[in-house]
Figure 1: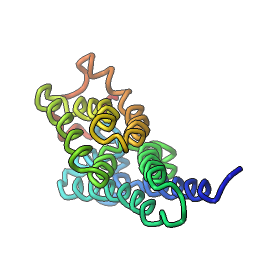
Figure 2 (figure 1 turned 135 degrees about the vertical axis):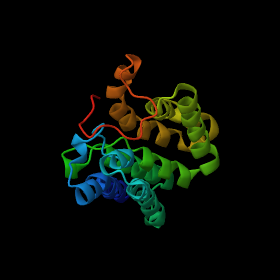
Figure 3 (figure 1 turned 60 degrees about the vertical axis):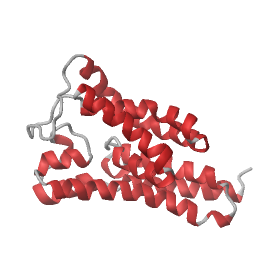
Figure 4 (figure 1 turned 90 degrees about the vertical axis):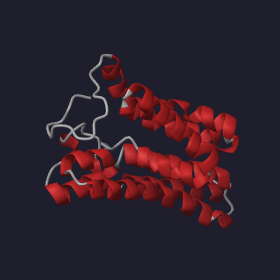
Length: 213
């Protein structure tokens, strides 16, 4: 039997998914360059590909902030209305998962989204800056600076996210585990090309023609 709390959790998921689906990078790239971001650079619908498409650092920052902000807003909505009687920790997990799923598979772009790194960063920073965000960032930065692969830093950060949650912030373990799944799925297609040496190092700009992977 569906309870009132279950209904609220479902509603939180839908709201969070729609927030996450807001196609920030697509709209900004279309407005300022007239291009379809899915056909530019890596084809990723994210902040860094906005930089490649437009050559504007402030548009990268704007996209990053909006993408992080929409995930933060989803979690804050779940927190704000917990007086309705649902389990707060479960609601926060549902909201975070919904926002990340929305960014990775947005309904407004026929489910062709980004890797949700900005959204992930916003969620981790909001929930536990010291024991979630900083360790995750340390894994990413260490990987990037030791290998030169920006993508590998993001990939390993995703792999280690549930481990970080389990040991350093166990109350958020399931949240970390769940949100890592869609991000991992979005990244996997570029992992094999990286092993084959086909993933560029330290790229900020790429030719405007879409790259493989």
